[in-house]
Image 1 (cartoon, rainbow, N blue to C red):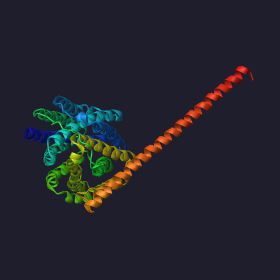
Image 2 (spheres, helix red, strand yellow; image 1 turned 30 degrees about the vertical axis):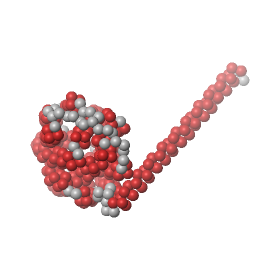
Image 3 (cartoon, rainbow, N blue to C red; image 1 turned 180 degrees about the vertical axis):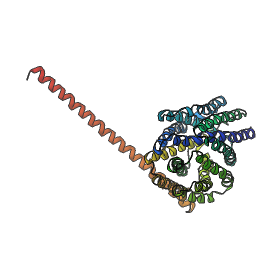
Length: 433
């Protein structure tokens, strides 16, 4: 069962990422083509982050929600996400695009949650790394085809977006047929008590900061290409095409690399946003895409692989739901910053650098596998970071409670004085004074 399931997951990725490239891969370019600025694009992405945060949180708090995977339910959700793209090219209003992208991401979260649960539950740490790296490598191969087709389609102008979304949705439905073939039986496991809390917290903080930086970078990079430099929309897909071609080799390299080498990916990845801002030639962006894709792949793998290592501390159900929630939080914070940035690209680039440097410091100081300090010091720093965060959270809760109580007392006092005043005026009127 494991082998057939592994094969289905890999083939599904092969087809699904052609679909993803033709739909989600051109969506930001579509928004920029319609004339939306960085702030409005960020607002659309911001709204779509809530399903991941809410559903991930609910599943983390109550892991029994994921104790079984229904194939019928998975197929319905999997197909529904594909079908939603058929209506996107016919929508142009800001409100409609927010709504449709929210619904699409709702389906995406449910799919990812179930896929992550299957992978984390059925396979061990080595199996998780194997499936993840192979899915990523084959996804890159299919993304090349997808972005190549998208580049051809978008060279036709607005009509190209219709072709891209519609053909992408149909290819996506083929991946639904593939995932419907194997048996999906998740072994029943006890939900363990959470241990290694400090390490998990450090990795989680790293993941949020990294996803936030990646989300913000993708938003303002598209705006620079289409609005800032005035290039055609197909340049966005060409840049993505080069990046995904690079990620084929990057996935295989980082999938086999020891954790100690990930520190180099983190350091060099932090330079990508500045290179994007200062590149004035369109062809330079192709080179930056190669650079950013190689090191960005390593940075992205780090969080996923560390969760595979700490999975025993969380349990597969909590691990999969936490990954989804952290991705939503990262997207939320990244797009929230972008919503205030408008067209100030240098400010947005600096924000991305700050987020990446934050992830860098968290990794270098608190994650033993990649820390620059000895392992015992990294664990101590992780404990300190966790304790300070918990104390800060509790203090903010206490302050919020006190503020709420004081506010409530002021409201009650104000209402009481108002009632006394009304009674006083009524008494004067009745007594004729």
